[in-house]
Image (cartoon, rainbow, N blue to C red; front, side):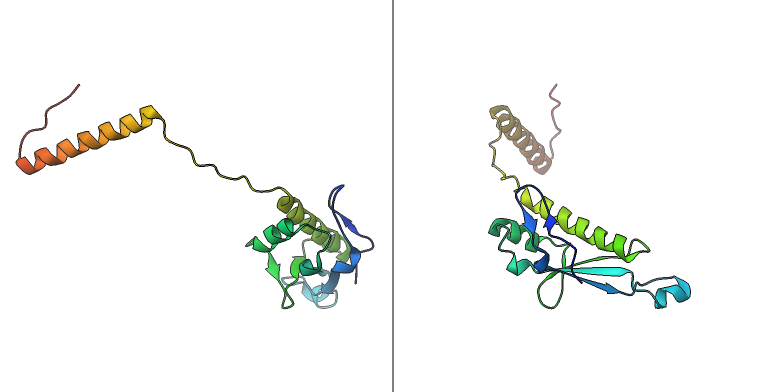
Length: 148
């Protein structure tokens, strides 16, 4: 079972229908006799390693996400059993895949290391000296002078 058409992510990217495979399976959970007769849960298998239409950096970010499940062939597995109809669940899996790819398109911000300010360094050194004096006076058994 394939989706009826290509999945368009945005104006730059789309996924060909040949890389998407959908399967209808039986849903889990309660439902009485009806749940044993109807296959409304949809599994979407996306062949990510054949994704020649997406740049390598986007594919590598998608693969690195910890929330994504993979099937035994290494394809992305997305499931939906949210709705009672197979059609709605199929649309839901496509929306989930689109959201994953849209998240991967945005490159992560590069963290630039910053230096502490001059006042911050001075304050840190003053606190260290104060703490050192307290410890030194403890060893000698002297009273701590109050500075205010």
